[in-house]
Length: 586
Image 1: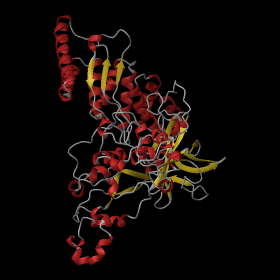
Image 2: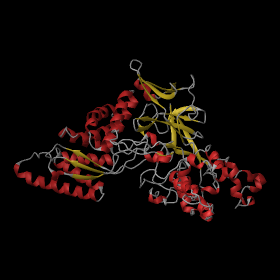
Image 3: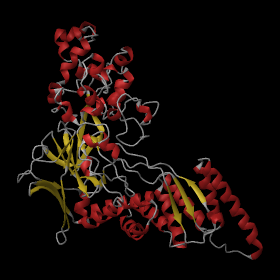
Image 4: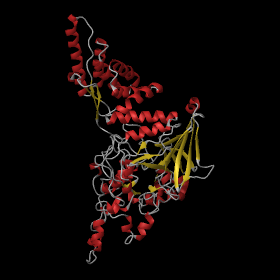
């Protein structure tokens, strides 16, 4: 229900008016900052095009002072090029000491401190640069970001509102826009938040082609084409969490209640009370569609914002979250459904006490919750799709590859043969183990890094490393359990000692998931129950459940909802198969 983030490497410029001295360019190597819920913040290289301020000193000292400034500036740029930001900061600080009115020194120092996450240190420097050259809108945007993060919300709002409409660089416009969205969403300015969201997405210049089904995607035939020959497996697969991981919204796919008394989520937080605000969400049905409506504000200025539920994400085993279309852009709605307790909650990762309808859905998120969706060119947010191209759920061809060629070969008037039956299609069982596991790791290995190729490029049988960067090494002692089943399995002695063991050793993807304890029979195919350390204490009944001891259920740190101050946390079964000590068990 929460998708992995994407790094967005780019360049943006903090620019002065035309005519600035090109010798005053400071090339600043910024860090890559990723929003904790998956959105790209300011990252990549930052270039400052600023004019040196006039040096105020006596004539005989000008040459000497300018020489010192040039020397510090040159060293600062060299250190930045080497990634030695601490030394670069020292050089800019020396420049500020020599010349307190030096715009380049204040601005560069502020950006470097910002990229280090030191907003308390960055804000005064950015403010000084802005006072010296008020036209520096990118500097003002960064100042607004700093002010917001150190609790100066009123000042942040003023600076961001001034800068945001005129920002040109995608990265800083995205960061400033998301911060402004958060401020509006927390203060009840729902209509202003919606307007900022629209500014972040530029309508596609290309026309959306009619790609209404998988069969219109090159080489793909769609699930319906598999039914005639694979009826039994197809019928069974329709009821699996994989197939149901995304669905179009209707009365059957949405599990949450819409009847009076069960369709309202009231939010109570200290921050809302202190600001004199109320916030509630109402799940409503109108003209055959279902909606989420936020109601927020002080009693004398209540605002509402309503969006239709268009797509359901999640099979419902743990819960569901919901998406809505706004033109060609796709967003997550702020309220989700939690199966345990049959309750409405804030969508995981959302800030409690806000009404944010602007969380964009990135292609990599959809790659693990759908079979295909065509991306379109768009603006700062990577969020533009052809809605008609959406193929919901994980389809047959996600694991078997494009099937049109296979169908054509099977329909040709030729005699049947074992070679012909398998022609033109991938049979995962015949792939090497690493390639079998790669198919699952595309979505079930959360430690992997950024994608190399566009979403929906991976084909079964290909090495996953060509599409998604391998995860970091070494792995932590206790890796995150959510979405990391493959990474944990690969640390298990069972996996390392069994060359043929793969995910399908236990899981039949064509059938609904079985009760966890039933997989104990898989363990006993290799292990003798008498060898278990507690077999003498428990006796033969130990054979009924190896799983809960050796693959315990653990809370995830990623799927967490905070609603009215209460945390709801998903639990997932660890796939690190081992003997857990009492202190290691959750």
